[in-house]
Length: 40
Image (cartoon, rainbow, N blue to C red; front, side, top):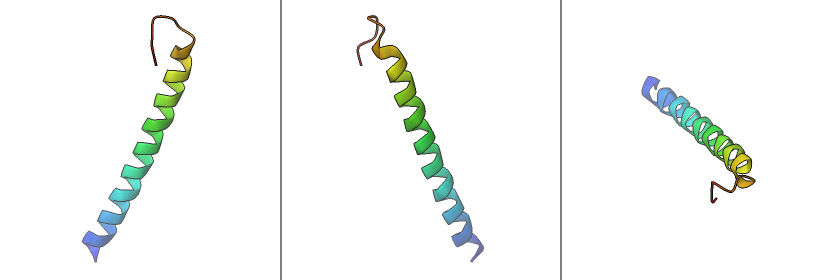
């Protein structure tokens, strides 16, 4: 029971992390799109 709850919380944390990573990546790529130094 305890392990199941931990796994669920861990999955939620992982999903949250992935969403945050994706969001920050999109923000960064958006910033660099105008710059000619970076090819996105």
